[in-house]
Length: 423
Image (cartoon, rainbow, N blue to C red; front, side, top):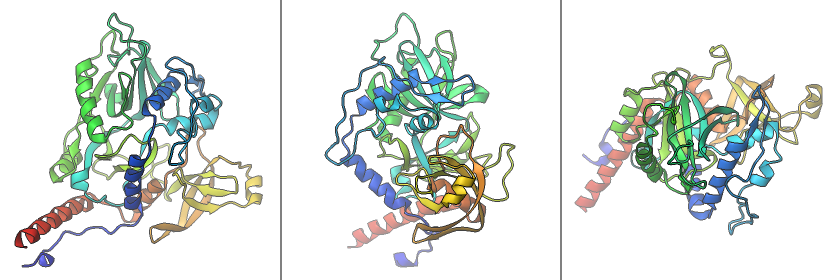
């Protein structure tokens, strides 16, 4: 029987350009020469010095020179400016702009619209904890955690490098930045990634190295120990698996000490890229998440899908992607009547016309205006989130599609080996 006669599992066809953008992201990684150490110090300084109001609605960025002053920036050889909003510019930001700046320092996963190529060889998978996504920074004898909109979550002593005022405190330049999810029921910080450890930047390290490094270093410091006088909250590394059949099954159905909120997939070669990236993906279904389809503030699924878009100068409605995806345009008369302005985040319902995607590009969206979004929100929805939520209602990407992709790749590899041996 030839390889073409083998009955293959169903593989869902691609509906977007997500795979193409993954390949471009990996290419840009190798081309961009980035001052990762400086970026880490900037972020640590900003986290430590952000000012929050008592209502935690207005967030201002006030940056000090606790870690290091920032030299002038120059464009690199590839035409990229080394931080569109560098530390000096960040000091001028207030309110929504400050929240947006801070949120975009995180590596934000896209939603899995299509199954990536080489899922079983080039990707990790782990169960994402439900909770509050935040940065945790330890420096100068204290530890601070901030939510993705910049609001202070906790200030506390920890066993992280220079995270508490003890007799064995590290040098002032020693600091740590972790990307975490705070799980309230067991008051534990689950570490999903790392930006810096003991002053050493991890921005340009691959996910494969970062996960290995964090697992070993967290155990060495005692950060995973039970809380004590100089260590108020427990930290815990996540179990990360190769995304083969066994790893995917364990992440999907295995027991974990926290409530699951979907699965996270990381490309093994991915560096820590700030903002939305297709090299990190989130996926959900009813088995591994309580809320697959977005709900209102009462936990109820809306009859129509809702999206949040940003209003641009010319009335266009954009996603948070870079470059943004345009969903439509508002007339000047309507903007004036509803007192809408550039930068506003606006909520829409998707009507019966739905979304029309042709050749992996959005052609039309049936938008129904609902009003301004919550003020505490940092930025608009990403395009991948809108498509994932739309598919979840009508044609979801199921776990069977992920397993089928793995099986198909394994069979293709076996067929190729058989052909080479025959030749």
